[in-house]
Amino acid sequence: MKKLVVLLALALSLGMTGVALAADADLGTTGRVVFVAGGDVQIAPDEQADAVFVISGDVEIAGTVNGLVVIDGTARTLAGSTIDTIGVMNGTVELSSGTTVLGDVLQLNSSVTRAQ
Image (cartoon, rainbow, N blue to C red; front, top):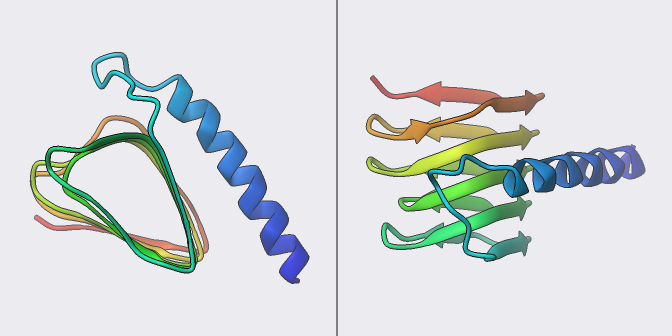
């Protein structure tokens, strides 16, 4: 079962890399890729990342992210954040009011909530 989860995580990550590279032209690109395994990360309001990958950890986004992948963790967004595409597996996405999602939210065995 663990091998299956790793393979699914890899497939989802590779798919999201393509999404990040083909992200909305309005967001622009920085070349910044953030990868965290077994820890937490924050993207501040003045920060942008082309891709953020978090495995077994949590991410809080207040800035701009082109592609976000969360596996076995939680993604929280703050008002004013912008994300092109989100992929989550075995996790949770909590979208605050004032968050802009330009593309899709892809989920597998996960929950997505949006504040009103």
